Length: 295
Length: 252
Ligand SMILES: Nc1ncnc2c1ncn2[C@@H]1O[C@H](COP(=O)(O)OP(=O)(O)OP(=O)(O)O)[C@@H](O)[C@H]1O
Ligand SMILES: [Mg+2]
Image (cartoon, rainbow over all chains, first blue to last red; front, side, top):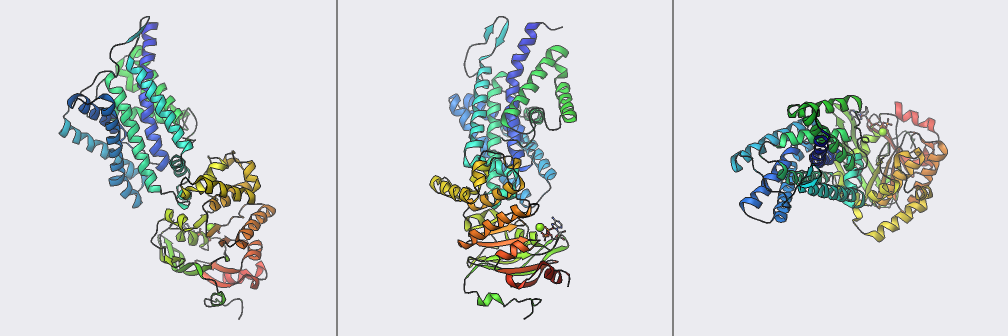
C-alpha cells in the first residue's frame, strides 16, 4: 500500500496535469459547440505550443513572456489555417461531419511529420517559469510550476467566461452553438465564427502545452496522448461550460496519478480509458452538467 | 374575373408602391423532389402579403430559399438590388429578416441575450440598441418582465413574441414569418398577428406564411395561394371570403 504522503503527493501532481487536460478539454468544447466538429488535431496545438516556446526561449534566447506570447499567437494562426484550408472548404461542400473529423485526424499526423522534418524528433524541455522550488510542506513537494498552471488556468477560464457572456463576439459564438441558422439570419457570419473558434481553441491548447512542458518534456508525439486525455476530460465535463471541462480535467488527472501510485504507472491509460467508458455508459451527458450549456 | 384565376398581372399593376422584394422563377429541390417549382412573388414597400398553403406546399422552402438556407435557382432582388448570390448572413444588414418555423430561439440564453443577438448587425452602437429594446418592450411588455428568463423556459406565446421581438431588433425593412401562430391558443396567436398589423401600419413590409387563414387574411392586403410547390392564385385578401374557398386552390 502507498503511504499517505505518496497519495497526497500524487493528488497534487494530478491537479497540475489535470488542469492542463482541462484547458485542452475547453479547446475541444469551443470548436465542438460552435460546429459539432470534434477536432482531433487539438493535441498538436499542445505540442506546438511547447515546441515553439522551446525554440524561442532556448535556441533564440528570447525572454519567456515573449516566447510564450508569440507561440500562442503563432499556434492560433495555425488553427485558423487548418480551418481555412481544410475545414471550411469541406464544410461548404456539405461534407459529412465524420469526414471533417477524420480530416482533422489527418492534420494531426501531417503536422507531426512536418515537425519531425523541421525540428527533429528529440524530446526537449525548458526550466520552470520561476526558478527554485519545490515548495516543501512536510514531506509533500509542490513545484512552483504548479502555481503557474493554477494561476494561468484560472485566469484563462475567467477571461473565457467573460468573453462568452459579456462580449458581442462571444455571444455570437454561443448563438452559433445553439442555432447556426438563426444566428446567420440575424447577420452573424457563421464561417468567421468557426474560424474564431479554431483560433481560440488552438491558443488554449498552446497555452496548456507551454505550461506543462517544464514539468515533463515535449516532442512531436506528445500531442496524441494530451489530445486523448483532453478529449476524455471534455466528455467527463459534458462538452458544456468551461469550468465543467476544467473540473473534468482535474478529476481525470487526479485519478490517473492516483492510479500510478496504487496500481503502477503501466495502468495510467487503462484507468483513463476505463473512466471514459464508465462515463459514456452511465453519464452520457457528462458528470458536470449537460452538453451545450452556457459556455 | 373569378377568384380562381391566377392573376400574375393583376394587383401588381395597380399598386403604385415600388417593389420591396421581387422573386422571379425561384425553384428549389431536395434531391429529386422539386419542393418549389419556379415561383414568382413580390412584396411592395409597406405591403402585408400572406402566403397560404396546406402541409407540404413548399411555404417553408420558399422562405428558406429567399434566405439562402436552401439552394435555389432564380432571381431575387431587394429594392432593385440583385441579392440572389448573397449569403444568409448578409441579408439582415440589408433589412431582410426571417422568423423561422419553430421560432429558432437560442433556447439556453436569456430573453435579453436573444434580443441582443437580434441587434448583432448594429455592432456596439449602444444608444441605438437601447432604443430598439424600448420599441420591442413597448410592443411586447411581457418580454421586459422576463428579460432575465431563459428563453426555452417561457410559454409558447412568449417564445413567439421573443422570436418576433428579436427579428425587430435587427431593424428589418422586410419581415418574413413562417407560421408564427403554429401551436398557439387562438387568443395568443391573435395578439401576435395584431402586433404584426401595427408594425405594418408603421410601414414595415411583411411576408407572412400561414396554413390557417382567417386572422392572417384580415391583416393582409394581398394573398398568394401555394400548393404542391406552385403559386395557384394571387389575389387581394378581401376576395377570399372563407377558409372553405381555399380548398379549391389546394386541390384543383
Ligand atoms: N429537408 C428536406 N428533405 C427532403 N424533402 C424535404 C425537406 N424539407 C421539405 N421537404 C419536402 O418539400 C416539400 C415542401 O416542404 P415545406 O416544408 O416547404 O412545406 P410547407 O408548406 O412549409 O409545409 P408545412 O405547412 O407542413 O410547414 C414537402 O413535400 C416536404 O416533404
Ligand atoms: Mg413549413
